[in-house]
Image (tube, rainbow, N blue to C red; front, side, top):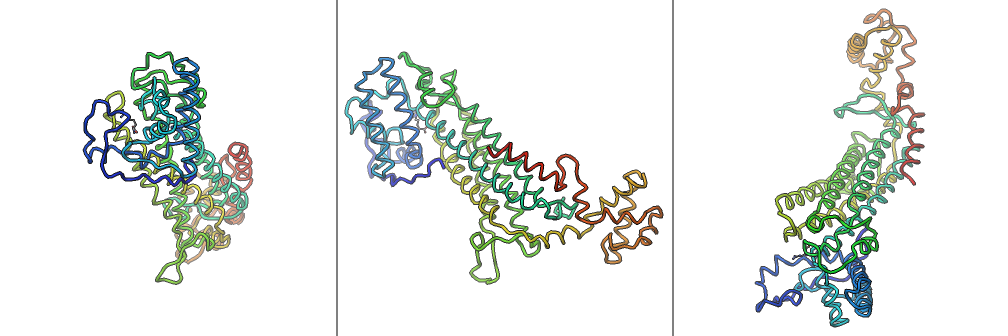
Amino acid sequence: MVDSKKTKTGAKDTPKPQVNQMWGGQFSSAPAELLAKINVSVGFDKRLFRQDIRGSIAHAKMLSRQKIITDADSKAIVDGLSAILRDIEAGNFTFNDSLEDVHMNIESALKDRIGEAAGRLHTARSRNDQVATDFRLYVRDAFDAFDAAFMALQRGLIKRAEEHTGTLMPGFTHLQVAQPVTLGHHLMAYVEMFGRDRERIRDARKRMNESPLGAAALAGTSFPIDREYTAQSLGFDGPMANSLDAVSSRDFALEFLAMAAISAVHLSRLAEEMVNWSSVQFGFIRFSDSWSTGSSIMPQKRNPDAAELVRGKSGRMFGNLMSLLATMKALPLAYNKDMQEDKEPVFDTVENLMVCVQAMTSMVLDFAADKEKMEEAASQAYANATDLADWLVRELKLPFRDAHHITAKLVKVASGKGKALEELSLKDMQVIEPKIRKDVFKVLSTIDSVKSRTSYGGTAPDNVRRAIADAKKQYLK
Ligand code: ARG
């Protein structure tokens, strides 16, 4: 995960705001307490400390290469920042609310550590291109972490699908039994969905991998900076072409939130099926004790809380996308402080989506399928009616609409007798359609129904085995 290492860096409340040392030159009094309160972001943007230090180191090295600052100052800055990074990671750093954000906290600590040279770091840079750079680096890390997490989920689904290429279950439409499928086929449907989520990740990552650093406040700078150098040293493909765009665009974060919202839908649908399937009414799957919770009053309960939370948390991820869309929609170019509101939705989505993907991966690997129960459900509710209609088309050359009509009549006869279609006698059938022969019974068993669905993408076990082999090649590299 992006910010997996916990630091002991709780933001400290400082009672009285002071004049900010970073920009307070023309100010004689401190900001109103409420201004300080609404302005402060370090409580959440301290998560960007690694990216901030990485960006500052690239910038300082570039400044000395370009003779904008001396090598000695550059070295002092780089060493100081590296020491600060170690301190933060070790939990020996206190973030201070009166310094507003992560950027000014780190710069101020650098000044305490190396003195005057620290003041040269911000040459040819603004917090506007600084924060845009930090946040891009953070979101890029998040994209990479999710690509790996979704791959692990796909691996789990593929493993379970492989175990269940021949496990029969009802396929549903409208949550009514429709036609028999296999559990392997059903699980592989999700492998495809998460595969597209990963494509969205890679596609967006490619588009966002350009460096805003060097755009400065909004207009670029008169210093002879080298934006190619900083872009390269931060792993970007190149510098962003327009300085106004560089400091004021957040579509990379929107694409991240959109990808996350869509994959939250996929996770939520799988979670919903797990909730249904693990109920007594379905009885298709059972979670082990590790993935079940009990009730404090009803001793018999085994609740699928984690699946419900995966389903439930999708709501906040949609909200996070909406929140940033609304924040951005009417902002004039270039930077506006509204944009400080870009971070919390992204942090919230990163943290919640990651726990959802990981929990889902574990649940996929955990459940035990009750094959008998599933097969029994697959052979009930006339799931083979389409097979009968198809036989009438194939063997008696009836138009499909007529075959549909005849089959519906046969279903009515069977349900009147409380029987399955295959339990009707040939005579019963011939009352409705005299040309029906006894070989019709060959297509009425659940396994034959499933085996017959050999069209590309269909549920026949051989097909599913092929799909699994293809998916391994495509996704598990
Ligand atoms: N904390 C700020 C943010 O997240 C950093 C940029 C501040 N820039 C400024 N011009 N005040 O957006």
